[in-house]
Length: 212
Image 1 (cartoon, helix red, strand yellow):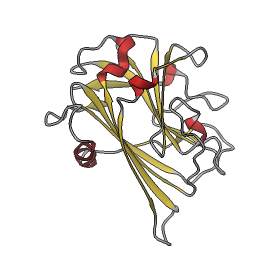
Image 2: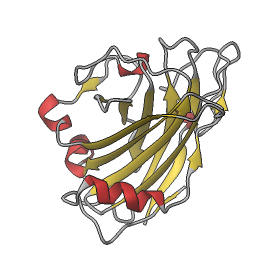
Image 3: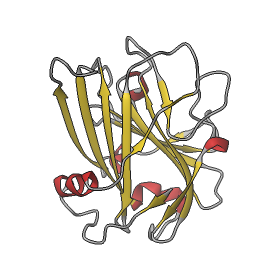
Image 4: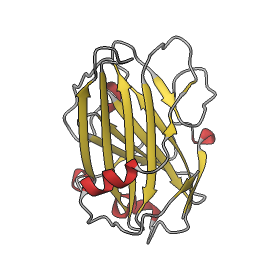
C-alpha cells in the first residue's frame, strides 16, 4: 500500500481539516474474517496518509451496537467498538499497536510479540489528536449506527523507532476492526491472517506500507 503525502497539512493542522482532506482519498476495506464462529454484519474501511511529521488515519464503521466500557488511556479498548493500526518501520521486528474505541480512548503499545508489550506514557499518547462522529442511521439501513474516527499521530509517539520524518519510509502493518465484548464479537483485518484462533499480534501477516 502506498501512503500519500498531504503537503498542505502538518501535525499542527486542525483535526477537522485533516478529516475533510482524508474524505477525498480512496478507502481500503477491513473485510477479512479469518475465523469462523464470529458472524457479524459490521462494515469497516480506512484511509491513511501522512504529513511528514504525522500519520493521518480515518476509519469508517457501520455496526448495530455501540457499547463502551473503557474510559482510561491504555485501557482494554478492544472490548468496545474498536479499530486498530499495527505498524513496524523499516526492518524492525518490534511494532506498535495503536488502538481506539469509538469515543477516542487510545492504547499504544510497543514490542516484538503479543506478550510483554510496553505501553507508552499517557502524556505521550495525549499528543494524539482525534475527532469522533457517531450517528444513528435511517430505518432502512443495513446497520443501526455509523461512526468515524480521525486520528493524527505525531511522529513523537514512535519514539523507539527514532524517526525524523515519514518521507520515503518503508514499513509493514495491518489494520483491524474488533469488538470482543459486543453482542456479536468480531475480528476483521485488512491483510488476511492465517491462524487457528483470533490473534492480531502476528506481524508475519503484515502488509507492505510505502510512504511517499
